[in-house]
Amino acid sequence: MRVIVAKEGMILTECEPEPVPKTGHALIRTVCSAISPGTELMIARRPNERPAALGYSAAGYVADPGDCGGLTAGQRVACYGGPYVRHAEYLSVPRHLVVPIPESVGFEEASFVGLGAIAIHALRKAALHFGETVAVVGLGIIGQLVCQIAHAASYQVIAHDLIPERRRKLAAMLPACTVAERLDEMGALVGANTGGAGADAVLLCANSADGSLIDHALRWVRDRGHVVVVGDMKMDFNRGLLFAKEANLTVSKAGGPGRGDAAYELHGNDYPIGFVRWTEGRNMGEFIRLLERRAIQVEPLIYDHYPLQDMQGAYEKYKKTPEQTMGMVIRYDPMNR
Image (tube, rainbow, N blue to C red; front, side, top):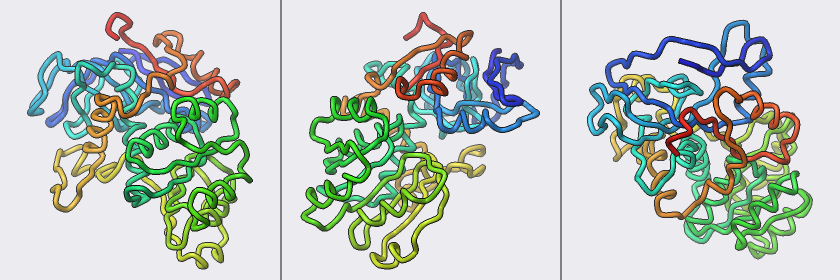
């Protein structure tokens, strides 16, 4: 089978044997997988002497359910989580990282299930309640999903991105949101929309080489509010700003509890719902439910589709013209959309 990897600074297609499902895994025939540009380009820039797998979010058909109860051959499913999920024609995925796709949801939208779980978990880390206000910086695919899900939950949303096209996209999709053209407008807009109290939470979905965005967030957030770092940035901030408000500063880890835990992911030991309400698998299911109810939309965020043999074009576009990109999908089976 064909897989996409990063090696010695290049992104390549290589051939590997088709995976054999392990106990507790299902074999998935991939229809499409979503590109996560921030993570994948970061991996590609490393001097990997050995092939490094790219991708972590996909959708397709169950080719072999193995011993995974609740799954059947031919069933439409979405899946998430490296190293099990990647850009490859076949995937061997643990049961808790596979969720069914209803007939009303297309493969392409469902292939963003991993990015959707990341967005949902970030909002959960913000500990928001009905009617509260969230400020979002960074309107790439994760930031766009965060804003849509926050709006669906009836939070007030104030957002900014440096790229005008991304701001226009959010404003067109969510007219009720407040979109700042410049970063230095955020403070005034947050104050005007909260009676001067500050945002209940600030989610930083951008990447940054320093901690300046954290300092901005600490100025915008209310007393004892939450700042959640979702993007890749240096954790270098003004302690005085944090101390003055006794704010909560946290990093959001991927799609939720269970990520990276072999007992949960590899061996299939679920966390009791009374102790861990929202695992990464439950967040995946919730993202699909939001798509089914049309509470959120991913299709308008998908700017391009690339067949596997032309995947180089997708990464080159992300590198050269990020203002013209948002969501991109790699197709493995163009006959099944």
